[in-house]
Image (cartoon, rainbow, N blue to C red; front, side, top):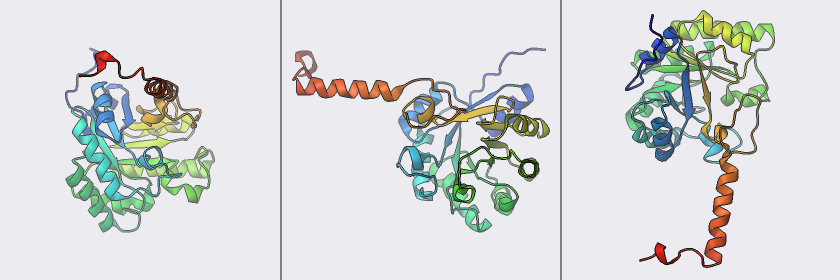
Length: 272
């Protein structure tokens, strides 16, 4: 049997399910603007997540809670214009889906219509099943998110690893199977023990994307600012930095300042 990797011209929700079935790992990164999305997409990423982490890395908030639906639509529409191949998944922000399934549907419809995104992502399991069902019944693809759910940070009180205790682990397994049963096309597991994450990935048919959930899942996601080293203040165990852009960018900008001050820039070749 051939083990050649299929060349997907356009990634869809079905592509991800096929990848899991074929044992091909799924790559996923965040992006929040046109230029970054274009770069990430051209590099061959499978999924671009327009994450509510924009609240942190783009707006400077301490948590993901302050970002609004309008702001998420703005970021998502910018990303969609820069992505040709990748599947674009958009986070539903805090307060736009938790309490009322009808409000959840309205929020999801706005994202799909106004941004052109391909799917939405929601945090939670059984407690938001009615919202998920409502969105899925409208034909909108849903990615789940379990484990550490940053929108619930004030309930947890900490960003520590989740589901280390048996009761929480059992609920996590139940919620993962519920999300699959409801019709979610994939699931993010954040900051849970690697063995538990692998157990869940092997027990459901939909792809499981991990962040701080070990290598036994079906794919990985990181925040682009973290993996490129633009953010030098965040260093969790699960993060691998592929560049140190913070150092490179500050050095380049400092050099520019020096060249302007010394009248070295622009030189004769750099003017008309």
